[in-house]
Amino acid sequence: MDYRDYFKGKKVTVMGLGLLGRGIGVIKFLADCGVDILVTDLKTRKQLAPALKQLSKYKNIKYVLGEHRLEDFQNKNLIIRAPNAPLDSPYLAEAKKNNIEIEQDASLFVKLVPASVKIVGITGTRGKSTVTHLLYKILQSALRRGSGQKNRKVFLGGNVRGVATLPLLKKIKAGDIVVLELDSWQLQSFGDNKLSPHLAIFTTFMVDHLNYYAGDMKRYWADKVNNFKYQKRGDTLILGNQVKKQKSKVKIKSKLIIPKAKLPTGWQLKIPGVHNEYNAMLAVVAARELGVKDQVIKKVLVDFKGLPGRLELIKEVKGVKYYNDTTATTPDAVMAAVHTLSKGESFKQSPRTHLGKIILIGGGTDKGLDFKRYAQIVPKYLKGLVLFKGTATDKILAVLPKKLKFPVTVVESMKEALRQAEDLATRGDLVLLSPGAASFGIFRNEFDRGGQFNNLVKKI
Image (cartoon, rainbow, N blue to C red; front, side, top):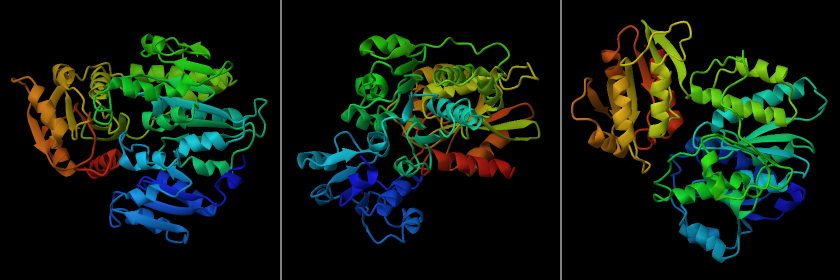
């Protein structure tokens, strides 16, 4: 179906405007399609002012802000829901009771694209963003070079900051490729519609989001496997080796590939960490499946500098290196970060260890996660620990060993966190922002947290 015919005459409630850009992009697209739109968000008009300013020219948008109302989930043709809407949302229950179609940005896009468009979906607790962006860059390079694929284009969407997926319907043509980063919330709607990408990548499966799933890892797994559950014969699933022991829990109909752990000899990554080497291998195998030649893959891979907020070196001041790892929102991610940096894997010219030389800035709001293993492992790498006040920090403090060789400080701002870290750091040390927790409370989101860190570090 042509997307213009699908949206013609529809009355739509958009649940969640937000400030990161995806909601804004979806609403602009719907408004341009002539849809009668009602936008509802729990944030107030004041909180949403930057987003509302971008939508001010549209006359076919009404707003209900600071609350949701049951009446806004009645007498509509379509609800486009916020990705992280609660599983027991009474408003979505009201829409279902009234037989109203409920969709998300990415799932609706996949339903409306031409059948010949190749959909690539990447999910996983950790690694999905790195794999998504590396594969996207490889495909961009391949299509620029021709490789027998003239006039094909590749697009990026899904769980990407500031990128709305629905508006890609204006640009997409038969035969194009779309690379989607998909979190578990977005994959709920894929499951509702019995959709899976043609090529699915599942990087890792670890404990996360237990606050959202009320401690039920089976619910989390059930959402994640929608990435490949409805694949058909002729489709492909690339499974990370950390997930392979879980594969027996669901029937796989597609071609299954579990890549080996090592990159080809001579393929050297700029970004640190054994985990990133495996992320790169997942992207390599996917690119090969899509017909890209190794010479193209290698050139992009060795030039890839990683993504912001993922073990990103911001600055070195007086021999102290400052790293932003704000997207590390689980204890496992923090453990990987301190291990990677302590072993000098990002310091190829200097084989010295950084064990006991890391000042870690972390903590924040709890996601229902367990910090016992974190408390056993992380301290041996540290020279100091600075924690943001919050429920996750309370859990960390409760399980840390009683006798530590370094100071532990609790702060209420990034400015204070950096001041404490600077006081502790001397030449050869590393200051690492790697929270292991959610950002809410002190910060608007993880990008606000990382942005504040970057701005303050650059002023040192």
